[in-house]
Length: 232
Ligand code: SAH
Picture: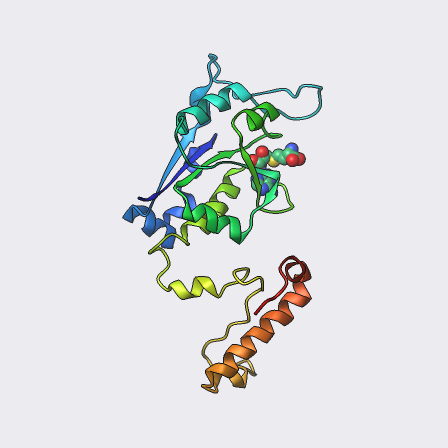
């Protein structure tokens, strides 16, 4: 059973985009996951194929219509579809590696990409959309956010990453940022690789990496330490 992604967008040409290359692209070709980009405009009912309208209460910009989006969602995700329905949104819960893992373990996702000022609130409620943010900044549309989310999910699908171990030691997987990396040459512009890493002492190396990871996390992301008290 492969992971099935359906993306509802006004710009289906943006998909698979970057996900057609490299690891994700190969996995897409191999059928490890599938991607369907659905044009929301195809579900408009008027002659001009309108998908947005002016905001109730006035103000700048346009709002995506609930009725058109509902038709698109019902087409992409008919009753019985077990996949979570997400709405990319700066007001959403920030995406975490834990949520990415959950999604990767499931049957797939249906993702709605917003444009303009966003979507009619009644649509979010009526179709029980889970709002997901990729960070505290504003994009011009949900498409790059959907690509980011799918990239994070797809690399966790079985068989996508060559070296499965590397996934488990990465930033966030154990509540810490990852330790620094080095590779040849041994001398780079007068900077050398830390001695411990070429000592061959695996216990010492593991200790050094752990302590570097803790130091880095304390300096840059103390919030991660507070969120998840270290047990190891
Ligand atoms: N007026 C809105 C921003 C709209 S941006 C507000 O102030 O909250 C247009 C669309 O881009 C959104 O509907 C959403 O789908 C997408 N988007 C923008 N920033 C995003 C973010 N940080 N994470 C996820 N999606 C985002």
